[in-house]
Image (cartoon, rainbow, N blue to C red; front, side, top):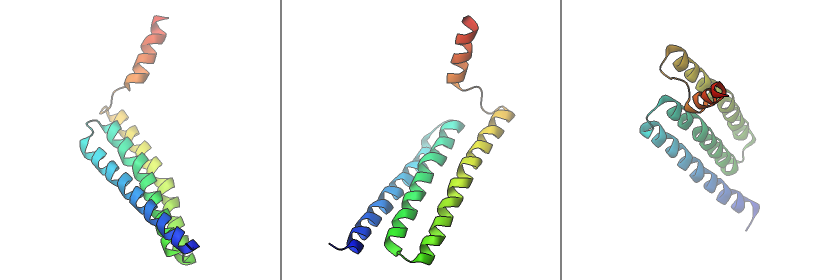
Length: 114
């Protein structure tokens, strides 16, 4: 098997895994109840899924121009998605849509009892 055959198989595997992660993120957005859980589903698996899709496309296309464009897409995903998730959570907390996280509240109550 040549290098191009191995790259095609690896690219297909990355595309499939990335599509599954993006599907899992979409299902999480629909099924999770609270904002913070939905936000987690929208950021973590979605970014990894997009990066795997980009990697799979890069392995399949192999053109320097295409790979450069895919690197820009991956870079913008890595820069914008965590910031947007943080801003959504911050706005929700400041408007009172989200109370204290249970773990943080439990730690505060434990410190008060000491």
